[in-house]
Length: 252
Image 1 (cartoon, rainbow, N blue to C red):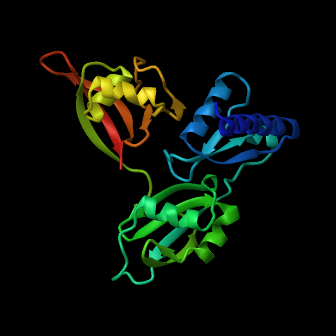
Image 2: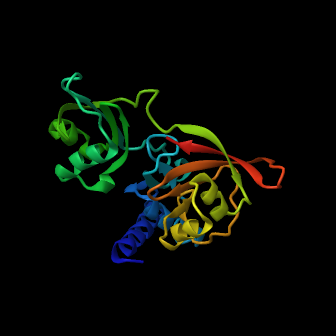
């Protein structure tokens, strides 16, 4: 582990212990996939109590980990997150916004990445999930994204059509080994799939996987840095040559 990962590990252990000792909820800022993998490793080893994860949408990639439960704390936890809407001041002259454009605009305001969750774009509009603490600041100060003047405001919830959606697709795979599944879904060779593991780019349900030969189970969410993520729905048949027909839901 590098210094940043060691600090996060120490922080997670401290939050879990403090929650148990005081009977109150303790939460992190938004965790990346690598941060979630560290959390899950600590949970498996019994170094922290199980944490609930909140990202604002189902299958959010960036999430807040919360230690504590209603039975232990005596009250229900309400995630301290806000939703922001970003729209061009002039729809006619606004540019199509990308995730990178919006993230760059946030970073230019001096916002730490761990204070922001997932970012969704829809043509000229964008929606951002953030911790409550900085929502008003961003709403007041985010006035341009790329070359487009924008208005940013806090909203009660994301629109129904915004969030995580999947596209059903089928592929042919030699087996349900993780490297074979990645090779099929991303149309790459087995050796190229192995390189993804060597680069520590493959996560299953938020946990880093370094074993290319492990079997993939139905319902597991596979994330690959630089390539996206998908839900594995399982084998749905076989070809005449005995290869598997697999079904996945590709996140859009």
